[in-house]
Structures are given as structure tokens and as C-alpha cells.
Image (cartoon, rainbow, N blue to C red; front, side):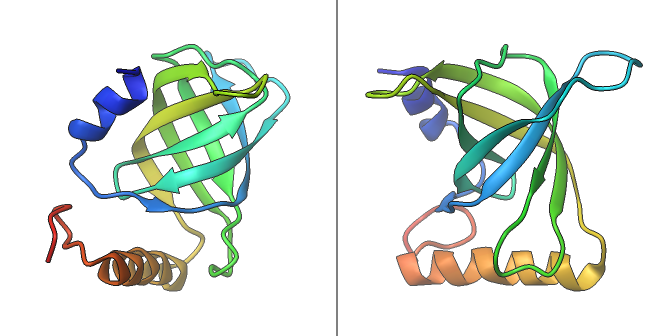
Length: 134
């Protein structure tokens, strides 16, 4: 069983499949961050996300992530801790699991739309907000 599979059983929040481009950078110290890296979201929840990247990211480091979701008017910016990173099957890239520590939106309308979007996806899947079948 992969580390990703182990993480599935420990989740507090259900995840929804979401594909969007994102940019991230490792926050190492008080120095200006290195150049941002690109990636693609695979899934997202209220507590974290999985994204694919061409770059390996060390578990335990803090990263800043900026996501542009098509249904939101402004980018979603988050700060998170990398929980796991493993080679993606069949590619030269990596899958990266992130636990959100902070998520910010430019305005409350965007935050409300994100919450509504996740709830609608869960309703479509027949899952309640605890991750159980409704």
C-alpha cells in the first residue's frame, strides 16, 4: 500500500476531483522564495490537496500554493505542509500530498463560492460533509 493510500484512510475531509493549474514555492526561511514551480491539482478538500509536479518536494516542508479555479473570480492562495511526495506511476513526475494550514481568498464571495462548489460536488457523489454516504 502506498503512502497516498494510507493517507486516504486518515482523512478528516472528503476530497473532490479537481484539475487546475497551480504555482507553488517552498518556504524555507526569511529569504525571498525561489522561483515558483508549476503543477496541476488532482483533488482537493477542506483540509488538503494532492497535486502533480515535475519536481520532487521534501515531506515536512512548508509551501505556498496559488490555484486558479475556473469557477472562482480570484485565485485561491494557501499555505500548507507537504505530508508525502512519491513518484507518479507511469510518468517522470511526482504526486504531492499537502495539508492546508491556511487558505485565503481575496474576498468573502470567493470563499463562499468555493464552499458551495465543494458541497455541490459532495452532493453529486452522495457523500455528506464527514465523508460518509448520505
